[in-house]
Amino acid sequence: MRWTQENTIRARNNMNKPLLSIDNLGVAFQQGHNSIQAINNVSLALASGQTLGLVGESGSGKSITALSILQLLPENASITGQITFDNEDLTSLSSTQIRHIRGNKISMIFQEPMTALNPLHTIEKQITEVLTLHLGLRPNKAKAQALTLLEQVGIEHAQKRLSAYPHELSGGQRQRVMIAMALACKPKLLIADEPTTALDVTVQRQILELLQRLQAQLDMAILFISHDLNLIRHVSDTICVMKDGLIVEHSETERIFNEPSHPYTVSLLAAEPNGTPAPINNQAKSILSCNDLKVWFPIKSGFFKKTVDHFKAVTDLSITVRHSETLGIVGESGSGKTTLGLAILKLIQSKGKIIFKGSHIHAMTQKEFRPLRKQIQIVFQDPYGSLSPRMTVEDIIGEGLDIHTRLNRTVRSESITQALKDVGLSPDCSNRYPHEFSGGQRQRIAIARTIVLKPEIIILDEPTSALDRSVQSQIIQLLRNLQDKYGLSYIFISHDLAVIKAISHRIMVMKAGRLIEEGDTAQIFDTPKSNYTKTLINAAF
Image (cartoon, rainbow, N blue to C red; front, side):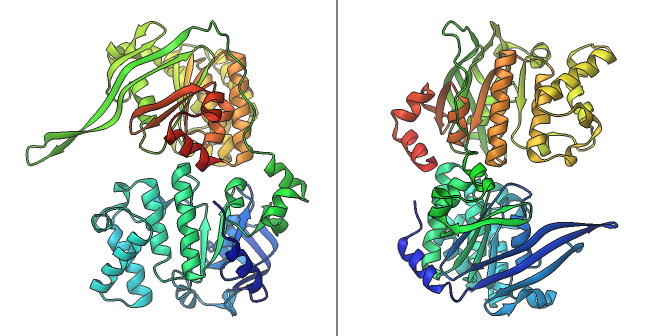
């Protein structure tokens, strides 16, 4: 999918009249007696109908630049320079004046809609609030307009969704609601801050096509922020590359990709996950197998809460994982990937056979299965959520040792030190807390917490989805090295096909709880059999 040539031509013609102009922007944060400079002399211009991509790794200053436009920075932030929008200096506006700009002339789509949407209010109330505040619509007209907006952004059964709460919608639906709210007042500028990071590749493509269509209808300018260069390439007319609060390169999209001039841009382009895992022995034995696995959740209704139907999360699924093998499981949200992993760990009830090294764990009680938990570990998607903020790194990694082993203090300390070294972290950080680390470092801590127990198999549930591409590549290489060193087997769950391709020996494609296709990685990518697999690959690449 490409932005249309007509849009590009129109944008170039309008560049002599920029809608948004940022000149020598500087942002500093005061922390006690220290001042931390986050943005340094950033300048850019954006015309109506144009899409400007702002790309860089986490901490480069992309989001701070965007938040500066709408005066959404915390109180300890100070701004220098000038931000001009539609011939008006935004930095000189009072808090009352800027409120008339926010959501009306300039709207913003945030990265995580579940956080940005109010969990206590229905979708109808959240959309109509924008229409009432900025356009002064009466309740009936506001509701009718909210319905129109939901239909416009492609939400099925829009009438029913009006009364739904955010947790009742899928990730893609929540993001569409955010877009509906952002476009409610037909803004001149839309700031999209990582709007598709946590979405499946097919949903990503739908969201991007939706934004393209709405941009053409409204002649809207878009500031598109992302750490994904492959994504930025498909949405932007021009690109600004940011690093450490500076714009290190600014050029037309194709020139950035074909003739990058800055070493940092070159490194970003080279950071796409690549390579393949080390080949496994053809005689490698099966370490884990599932036969006819089924996970159905009852749907209850009526006063007596009788079971009227079932939500079929996983149906008649069979898998095999061999020693030192990585089985990649790919599919859209709701396909049953995570449910499968939780069933293997006996964290949810299931039917069917689960056999680990000859032990029929499906027939075990939780007490009987507990000794095996040391050998089957899991790494979750969000390390910030899965690591206790009140525990030090040493306590986090050592907790499993305390539960599953009886090591003396010296051996315990040596095991923690070795685990930290294995994941590329200094043992000196053992007394620090999770919030003191970057996202990639926290994920390394989560991996250290699993390997310290010397498991046989690790289930990795979307472990790289929220990380920059360069950090993703580092984590993938780390996992390969650990697999070679300790003979680990992995079940790697992801919706990112580039990551799956780089880490997996074999791939399973799931849809609606069922197996769609299975085969060696090369076969799946080179000669996919099912139309669904072809759709996933086309959307990703």
